[in-house]
Picture 1 (cartoon, rainbow, N blue to C red):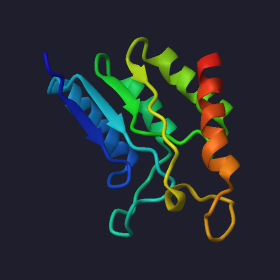
Picture 2: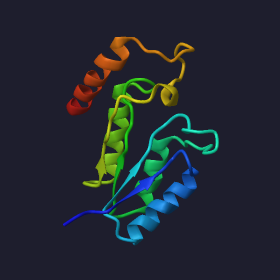
Picture 3: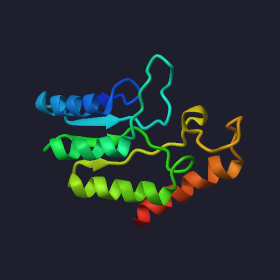
Picture 4: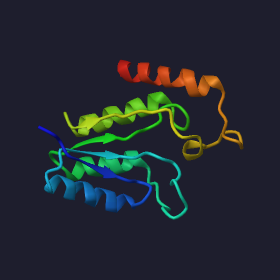
Amino acid sequence: MPELGYSLSSEEFSASDLVRFARRAEEARFSFAVISDHFHPWTSKQGQSPFVWSVIGAIAATTKKIRLGTGVTCPTIRIHPAIIAHAAATAAAMMPGRFFLGVGAGEIYLHQVGRDQEGFFRFYEREVLPEFAIRSRRAA
């Protein structure tokens, strides 16, 4: 049986709106929702990007059935992999059997925080750290 999911675009809506949309998605019987995790919006017209882990906690507290996952988070460039593992474990504890973690390499201009002006990362940061992050998560 196909499942229908709902996309929570954190670049386009406030934290409160995202929580409300997740509750409404659950009421509409969507099977799951994914929430984006970016430090910056894609465009200046979007203008949002709340801290996704706070929003996930609020969604966990206000829903009962819908599964929720990050679509996707970058566990290497702006947040240490151990912190992502900690946040994901906390979300999973708050949403038993309902939380899933989606990870990716990240977009340079969306995750550039405290790095060189150009945003070009060394091979180590773009190629080696993602593998380390996945291994850290598996160990958590």
